[in-house]
Image (cartoon, rainbow, N blue to C red; front, side):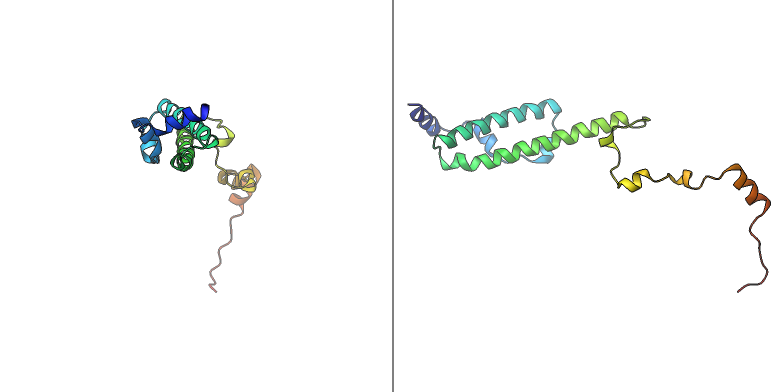
Length: 144
């Protein structure tokens, strides 16, 4: 009985919501949306994916099976854009602060992260400064 009901539901004309879900989302369009809109769209896409998986198990149409891939990729796009937004917001929040979370610091390599900064590298002790002032590099008149 349940399969008969699902099959009859498959035969109905696709609504505007179904057509919107079929279309591949563009990342540049997603970037213009707010975080709340992105999360709402993510929930809709996940619900759509759940319906498609039920249809797959109950022997749905081939068009629905092909749609699974598109919906999965849409979910990935939405998550990517959302995570990028969150990261940029976090970067703006910590800009100019003394301490920055590890995931917002530049990656580089372990050796580069532990190396001295340029100003630290060329610092001299008071004794070195005095010695370099008192005994400057000799200049010779003979050119080679």
